[in-house]
Length: 455
Image (tube, rainbow, N blue to C red):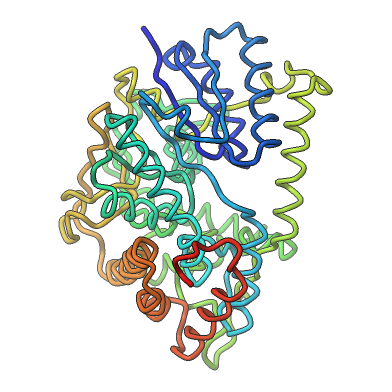
């Protein structure tokens, strides 16, 4: 069968650029389709196009390859448009974290919650909505898939302000089937060498994970009717005992922080590298010292170096200085193209997707934008029911959603009052005066990247 036309807006993506090329040339469902690469950086586009061309040649895939710095040249008749762009990602995240830390707000990632999440969304929303507008004109039936942080905010912006296109949003933190596989290994149901979840095991498993992206919670883990949460907690205790104080900020002490939250709420935070940034408990507030420590600050220079090294390696593959066989042998797919493959091929698979709740959590609004396990086909994601979100995490989740909704509205309307309101409701900003100063400082220092309509 003919494959889909996939347009990637932001072909040089650190996390997505290489995997989409690998999946597109290896999947029996996708390889007969068209891969259109878009990037406004001509050098980056040349590199990723060269990498894709050499991979296609080496694998003998019949994939058609297009590339352009102008998305409108390749959008016509697209089936999927994947948003994965970002302008100087590490640089501006570092700036966001630096400004926020000056006013006592600590961010270990700085791209989803806190002032960093607000301003990253403000940098990306105008382009996301512009791409959606072009898609509505040139490829009305396409699915627009956001793969940019903060994925909830951009997903909300597309849902509320680009309702004439079909869209959902993704994060690879809960990548199926690997998520279930790893959890079953953790409690000893499957051996370490297992590479899939057998149907007979899947049928005996009851697993419930959901919430806002980066703020998701494991609320049920049963196997053959037995509660696996005590075993899972014991596994986290083992991890906590081995944690390295020298680890970078996102990785440091996640099991110890997570155990505190599990003991407090009775459920496990499934994305602790980010969740610890969504709560005020390790911001250094109050009289009692934080245990084990207040959050570390995102290491922007380290991430920028990693991104530069990845692109340098891409250039070597594209130019033939490194053997393309090495890329093919070590390459792997990704969450977005796994989902596209399932949708296009009508494969009976379920994935974690950010979309409207639609009754999945009975005690949350139908239009609450959540990360949920969904059945999916070309009609889009259908969330699986989860019962009720537990009290405690329910209130925190609603606060996070309010901040994200306000940020999306601000990004779509260029209203500074809404930006301040988003910062003031943010769970880790506890001083309105500081919120105002963070806002003013960031707008002042990011004039060259933020839309001119803010000024």
